[in-house]
Each structure stands twice: as C-alpha cells, then as structure tokens.
Image 1 (cartoon, rainbow, N blue to C red):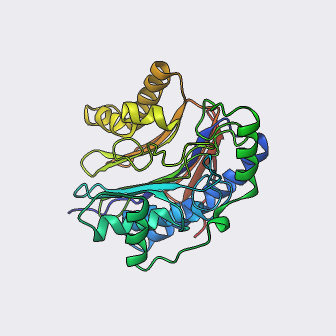
Image 2: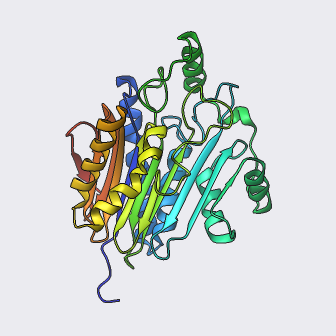
Image 3: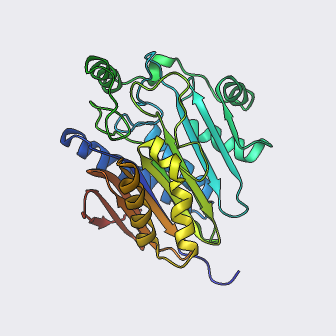
Length: 316
C-alpha cells in the first residue's frame, strides 16, 4: 500500500416526503452522526467501526426510523433490521425481526465478525445477541410518541401504505445508513431501519438484504439505500449502483441513474448515498426529501431538499 487514503464518511437519515416540522431534527441528527463516525476514522479506526458508530448515533435519535423511534407494525410492536458489509473481503452481517435491543447495527456487526452465517432473524437473532452480551431493553423503551401517532393515523386512514417508506403520518422518517473509506482504502457500509408503519408482523424489507439495502466492495465502492423497501429489493438497488460504477460510471451519475430507473419502473421513491473507491461522492433521491451529510477535507456538507448543498467547517 502506497499513500494513505483520505478518509471520508457519508450518512443518510432516510428518504421520503418528510414533514417540514421534522427537517431540522434530521439535519441536526445527520450532522451529529457524521461527526461521530468521522471521529473514528480520524483516530485511524476502521471503516467498519466508523459506519457502525454513525448508525448507532442515529439509532439513539427519535428523528430517525431506526433503534429508538422505529415505527410500529400492525401489532403495535417495533421490529427492526440492519446490515453491515466490509468491502475488503465482502464479509457481511445482518439481522432482522429484532425487538428487544437498542442497536441492531451493532448486533449485525457481531454477526459479521463472530458468526459463520450472514443473516440471522427473529428468535435466533435474539439468542445470538444475548450470547454476545448485548443487553435487552423493554420493548416500550424503543417506542416514541411519533411512532405511536403514525400507527394510529395509518389505522384511521384504513391501512393504506404511502408511496414512501414509512406510511402516512411519518412521511418517510426513513432508514439510516453510512458509507466510509478509511486510511487503508477499505470501504464499509451500514444500514438500519424500523421498516414501515403498519407492516404485518414478520415483514422483512430491503435493509437487511445485501445488494438491496447495503453493498460494499473495495474494488468499486459502497452504497446504502433508503426509500420504498419492496421496490428497492426488487431491483437490488445498492448492487445496481455498484454495477454501474464497475462499468465506469461515476458515483453521482450511477446513483442518480439507478434510483431514477427504479422510480420510473415501479413508481415508488428511493434515495442512496455512494462512495467510489477513489472517494467520489454520490447523493441522489427521487423522494421529496432525504437528509444526508458527509465530511471531507475538514468540511462538513449536508442537505435535505432537492439540489441543496449546505456546508460548514468541520471542527474536531
């Protein structure tokens, strides 16, 4: 290995119709998360640890549909899922139908490092987490007032799913995700979600499915997606973006082309954040809004509206 790679970290806080009242909380949340993750990279930490740290930050924040603040299924319960991937040797870890733990992404990371399997769900995931020493939390401690209000509105409106991920009241509070390159040039991606309001018990979306919600390959780049889960998994959106980059398309164009193609074909919206192996950034969403932020060269860039790029100096 020659010169050290310049570390970069990018995060998203979910694509959707996102109500104006939630915009500031999301912008604050992604800026906090990108700082948490970037701090790991600055101390020569791995891309895997950095994306986990960024997602953990958002799993604690009720402005996001992941961890605390996750939306509720028809039974009024939280069922979460997450995945993480290392681009170095394509190692993956994912969990689904997680109920009793605050940080599904940390359990997914343990699956990557400590399990011969890639995706573990339900009771087995719970047992794995307990075996690895993760503390259980009471179900109700994961439920926010926003999530309860969203389920109530969903049921009152007759249980019709909105065009975005989270149904009606929440207007796409969204999955969270992070993509990083560390100083060794390794790429990692992490994605975590509570799914969609009013989903049936046991519904699994795109987030824990490698190639749909998450993909990383040191030879090409990394992608984390958000949006209408059923549509994302039909087109394997993360991997679609990776394949376009592999064919020579730049990160921004690949992200835009794949998201646009999905929306054209399936009439539902999505968004994605992308890094190429050379550190080029791609951010695109076909939804009304998607919160995102990245740090590069001591500058923090962020936004939530279409075409918006705000910046501030990154102070350690």
